[in-house]
Amino acid sequence: MSVFTHMRTRKVIGGIALISAGAMVLAGCSSGGGGDADEPAASTDREALTLSIGTVLPQTGQLAYLGPPEEAGVGLAVAEINEADLGITVEVEYGDSGDPDNKAFETTVPRLLDSGVSAIIGAASSGVTKLFLDQAVSAGVITFSPANTSPDFTEWPDDNLYWRTAPSDLLQGEVLASEIGIDGHANLGIIYLNDAYGSGLEKSLTENFEAGGGTVVASEAYNANDTSFDAQISTILAQAPDAIAVIGFEETSTIVPAFISSGFDGSKFYFVDGNTQQWGADMPVSIEGSKGTQPGPVLADDFQQRLIDQWQEQSGKELVDFNYAAESYDAVVLLALASLVANSTDATDIAGALQEVSGGSGDGEKCESFADCAQIILDGGTADYDGYSGAITFDDNGDPTEATIGVFQYGADNTHTRIN
Picture 1 (cartoon, rainbow, N blue to C red):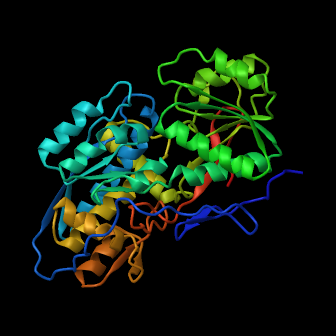
Picture 2 (picture 1 turned 90 degrees about the vertical axis):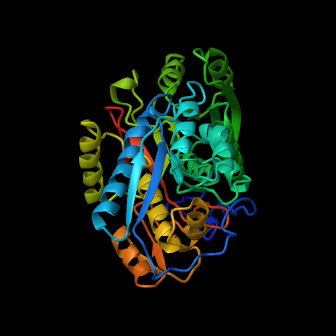
Picture 3 (picture 1 turned 45 degrees about the vertical axis):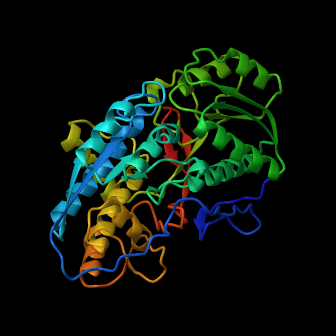
């Protein structure tokens, strides 16, 4: 029998992760940037607004596979907001974030800031956002990430200008630890990328796995530019783990085969949002049976099809992954709704209304599309947007207080399907 309580419902509500009766509980954090600004009232004296945004999302680098779904989500939201024709038009300029290694953001961010955007959508990587967030805050521009999961942003001195639709790694680490324990593994090995994302998730996974009665027998870090992982693999395998968690990005396709060639079972790996991708032939060994976690609810079929069609129109290419597409879409919708509430495209004004339109004020009317929410605002009411990424409900720090973590399992073709 597993040392862990069986857990199947995984949500964060009101700053607390609720995973079922008798399960681990994650307390929310307080302090830091957030929603202290006065909330502007809707105005009846309106002029048509033009909201300018930019994206700093991965077109290159270790997380390039996340670029298409995130940019498709942004593009779809922009198209549907503009089609609604309800007092606001959104203009978007796309840009590459790259990663901390190739530093594409060093070109993209200044270009966007100079162009006068009110908000930047991105980055996907917590490590990249940390490298430009202070610059954006100094420029008075909102940074709105659909994929940052580092707990560090909760208390970042951001002047209320940092927001995210992705939940903190505190939740993902808890869910992953639970799944490993449910599968009957008591001794875990971890190999993780030594950056803000990897170290934060490793800490959360370790704490939660051991709190549930398991033992992390070895935990080894590697650096972004490493090409050999032999030392870490030898150290971990020497402790005879039942399962191995790999916390990283595209280098996973090198790390996993090295473990398997040393005799480890390819069905007993556990991945995270950074590497739970549709590996297919890019993974040269079988990982059938292995699992991974990703934030986000099950996406409606019609939303997926709209994303596919949007990406075909934007790029002429097929959309394969949907990671953080909903979170990207919702980020744009929330910005547009907050702009309507503020009757302004000024970043500070928009930031002052973001908590309200997410339902954080607690007294809004539920709505599930930009058009429905915008009409509520234009009629003088308070909108509470629940989007494709779920009921977001920002807290005072700009963090979502409600989120879902999905569990995925790999089949014989090294692609995954959602199992929970």
